[in-house]
Amino acid sequence: MRVQVAIIGAGPAGLLLGQLLYRAGIDSIILERRSGEYVLGRIRAGVLEQAAVDLLDEGGVGKRLHEEGLVHGGIELCFDGVRHRIALADLTGGKHVTVYGQTEVTRDLMDARAAEGGRTIYEAEDVSIHDFDSDRPKVRYRRNGTVHEIDCDFIAGCDGFHGVCRETIPRSAVKEYERVFPFGWLGILADVPPVSDELIYVNHPRGFALCSMRSRTRSRYYLQVPLEEKVESWSDERFWVELKRRVDAEAARTVITGPSIEKSIAPLRSFVAEPMRFGRLLLAGDAAHIVPPTGAKGLNLAASDVRYLSRALIDHYRSGSMKEIDAYSGKCLRRVWKAVRFSWWMTSLMHRFPDTGDFGQKIQETELYYLTGSTAASTSLAENYVGLPFED
Ligand code: FAS
Ligand code: PHB
Image (cartoon, rainbow, N blue to C red; front, side):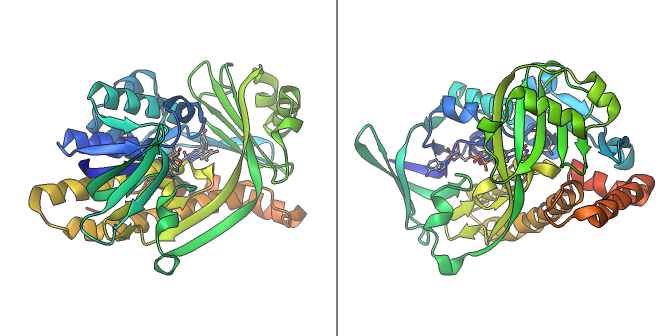
């Protein structure tokens, strides 16, 4: 079998890339090791930058997003028992973010690909990539006991942090940067109305908390927990009691609690692999980088990479040039590192570390008082949160 682009992974990066290539008349196949239902069952990101919304529109899959997504012009920072609004749109000349779950983005992309007859092989086993340092790369996979081989022009490694693509690259060719945070996020999804119209990021001596949402009737909450914590030791009741101890008094009084429909603990790390291109293999999304979710950048960085990668591949097939392919990794990484910095900064500011102590808590609160009292400082947070500009 031959295809122009073989995409490994049917998460947001792989599906969005496949959709943008399809709209440009470029043939692709997606190989996904899990079932579609399993992929949809993962509860992850919730906030889209305008650039990600624009890309989904470009892919022709923005209809439900515009019907159901919640457009937010601000967030709140809660510290020392008081909430302070960061007016994102006012501070950035009108830029907003849209609250729309990653699950829904993935569903919309899967539905579009199926309707357009795009090829996605789910439950593809033992995917392997070969000869990507030549101009005739190959991909192999097993399905129902039969091994299949695909000849292609390019391989897009969209297979996430634990994928096969980055792991196949010779170790001497990759430089990895990593910082693992000494805590995780315990997340709960519940069909209860959100406690506030906008997201609330909480700095508290007991630990970070986040009040988010998926719609006006479905809420998403997070609590910072120790790394060794087990989700089994957190009953719904224990979660709600702890959340009320960390949020401000009004939120504690008005939060509507209810049974969880999903509850899980995610570790937090910053990770970047450089470069993101190896011959005819190009990495995108979590396959190349991971950020702590504090800055709501993970999914948006995947979209950012796909914006650059789709344009580079379209340019190649239209002009025969490799110029944009050659520039891909550098362009991605300059934007990736700015998001990694912002996510690290916001995580460091909002979380309780083992060595924070009383002095460290006062320093964090003082930085937050300065931040929320300074237009310059708030603008810096706002322009990073809504998404920094792209290079041409
Ligand atoms: P993904 O990991 O989503 O997709 C990769 C796909 O490749 C998966 O479907 C996987 O099954 C498949 N795959 C892996 N190995 C394969 C192989 N060998 N062969 C074939 N397929 C293979 N981001 C936020 O912005 N906010 C959040 O709150 C947030 N919460 C998160 C919670 C968790 C537990 C995790 C893990 C991530 C979270 N993220 C969050 C980040 C997340 O949203 C990612 O940034 C986003 O899923 C990136 O999309 P992809 O790059 O497509 O990677
Ligand atoms: C979410 O709703 O899942 C979410 C929102 C904002 C973040 C992280 C997660 O920074």
